[in-house]
Image: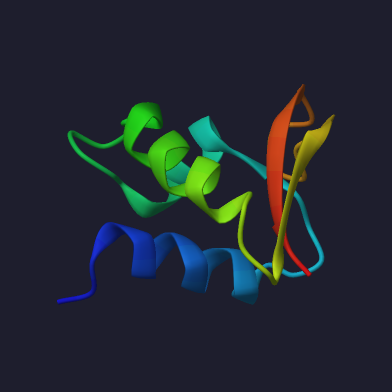
Length: 73
């Protein structure tokens, strides 16, 4: 079974070049009890400092809200 970080990374790569907010990632991947934004935020915050991912203030491709969003580049 893939770990939460592996699932988040795979989702962002599949959805490239779209930006996703933590809440939408959590809902799409059913993290925790189904929408645990904190679990997603922990992963995306760590990805912010790695090659291949970008985290900025922008518009989420899924919900359209302006929030911190993450993208696989």
